[in-house]
Amino acid sequence: MVSSTEENYLKAIFKISEKENAPASTNAIATEMKTSAASVSDMIKRLAEKELVSYEKWKGVTLKEGGKKIATGLIRKHRLWEVFLVDKLNFSWDEIHPIAEELEHIKSDELAMRLDEFLGFPKFDPHGDPIPDENGNFTFRKQVLLSEFKGQKGNIVGVDEHSTQFLQYLDRLELTLGTPIEILEKIEYDGSIRIRIKGRTEQIISNKVAQNLYIKAS
Image 1: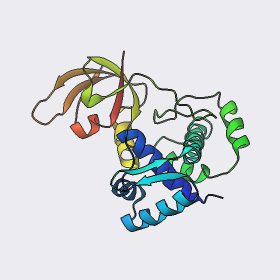
Image 2: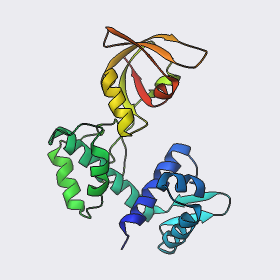
Image 3: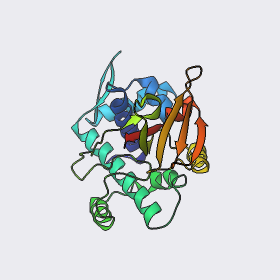
């Protein structure tokens, strides 16, 4: 059996490895899990004993097939629950993450399959993150961070930060998923960007915000 804490570590390793395209370092895992490097080392040993991860000194941690299956299954349930909470229970996108963190640990593949079917097999969650299917396959699309966007017009399709404060800030600016924006000016001095939202409202957003918004060219 794998505990909820062990599941969370596997999910953290998966996310770090995907983002960095490299094995997850002990320090990166400690940051993600908000714990000490010593605690991470102890957990890695436990997970290695269960044949869920591989660890090479100075290189980092990678998931074995069993660990990857658990991690993607957890991500799948988390994101399906987020869709359910928003679409069926009318939660806002800034409220759902901590609730889904608890629901994702329900150990029922049948429940996940029925939930997926009930929701119409969604490909993306309310934050724009891809939902893996029952085999762990993700759907990807052409998207780029606004800070790196070279075009002039696009639609917001995802966020790289899920904090309540950030999502509520986006709500105030009306920068939610699906919102069309137009790039009016990129300010070289500090990387901020002047945009037009929904064809009417002009707004200057900081480089930090631009580094956390995914855009798809329209």
